[in-house]
Length: 266
Image 1 (tube, rainbow, N blue to C red):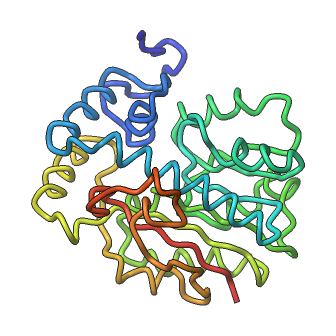
Image 2 (cartoon, rainbow, N blue to C red; image 1 turned 135 degrees about the horizontal axis):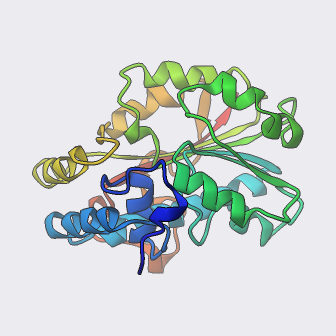
């Protein structure tokens, strides 16, 4: 696998990035040697590293399908990362090709490859902005063209908030909710160290040497993030427990390392 360094001159490919590490963990090829080395370091401290990323991707697909069952036909995917298999528009378009999806990511490699993937798809777009700036995202031409915020939207924040170190992450969520119509759905998954603190401390040390150190938040903080929403069953659980099929179960469930939940905006 060769590094596409000549294509991304402005990217420091010697420093690993979580989006590209995640891509490699899912079997993607939009990553650099530094990203692959970091993931291999993750596997040394957590042999379940590939299970963690695949289980999270499984939650994303199930959450998209659930939102569609509730009548959602438009999605905003924040921190969408590199477009590996099983992304939002693929999961949605298997059911309804007319569903509209706006991806948001400011990592150059992720944004560039997403833009390529979406060529020829009129009802999808990528906005290259920082998710910490909801106003810029909501006012972007691509967002305004594809999404109608007078109707419910599926807001996906899957495995992204643990890269936001701001202590007022609940305030960030409130800013997003202010744009959303009642009946909108919010899907969140988040790394936690509450059940495996020693191992996750080692995982955190691996991410300390990347562009985005990790911030763990316990399941108990979900109440703050889902303020104004009614959680749907089964509530806040590990990714492999959220409306999963029997073959997706993991024992013990904390091996998934990421909790997940979906809420409906009141």
